[in-house]
Image (cartoon, rainbow, N blue to C red):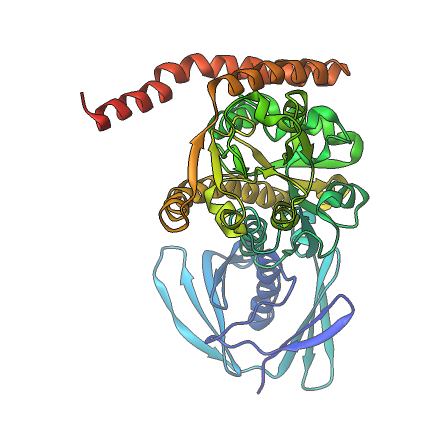
Length: 480
């Protein structure tokens, strides 16, 4: 005899031959449905109805069903599996004493059909007769059988370390957590849409997700840049605290809501470098007319200081600096800057990264697409974003130090600090830019007020903890 389970799913009929050695899982068949099917099979094999107490998908092709027979108060556990062309199960009495493995030869073929609200079990007997029973599916079970295939577009060059690989990691985590129910295909900048059109692509629904930085969308909402970074503002640790425990994320989502986009924090580089220059910066005079690739609020500060900010995606920086289209550029830090080869076309590498002390990288999600996800997949997506958010910071922390040594020791890069008077002027101008940006509307004002209040509260605490410790560590390392 031959025992087969046939499945008709989404209008396509197929026959599934299960084996204990390598048990296949029908695509889209949730654990609850596997349990439901096997409960029905157990009842069919016994030739009588059973009152099921619970069922458990035990993996490896096994399903454990706990039940009572109507004419017997004993609680039984049946662990079912398939071995070649035989159905084998072990019954265990309620007192825990094991039954014995028993073989049962069948003269019928059992098939099942998965429908939106039910599972139909059909038993075709050797005499040509067919019996069928319908078992309802719960709404949650039906939802868990759905699959979702999304597109994610990014602002980053393909395979750029950390920034470019983070969305790939996000997609990998979601795929693994969902067991393939939720897949995300990642497209680098220019593969599906240009880098600076990512927000529009997500808002319009041509891609369900995006990955970039909020300061690229100042044309949509000037205050959006705050959710990336603020000159002389919070570092990565503080930014994450504000977003997830200080009300920042709620304000961020309120800002993006009119566009049909839901943001989530999905990365942070930590404090960046001030950038690459082809001439020394000794005073404010050296900034006059300087054409520099620098986005966000930092770009507006540079403009007020006499420079010329230029917006461009990372993929265009090398050629622009090499050909003189720009005189200087900031990008990220040693790890990513080395990957772009900027050390080959600029001599001076300045710090500190006054303009980007803790830039949050964002995942953008189309609001309608997000609403279409069942609760478990939405939770997986949000959990994956939180994981990638921390993972990126960890990667930059580990890799930047080694990359800086390579730039200095192997490429002869000169690392210099910006003059104090230049930094002081930048700080003054930053406050002006922030106040003017927040004055445009009530929501912008609330966002800036929230940001400043949180920064003020953590500044006092970090002065006696983080900063005090770092100062102490430096003193100890340098000796008396």
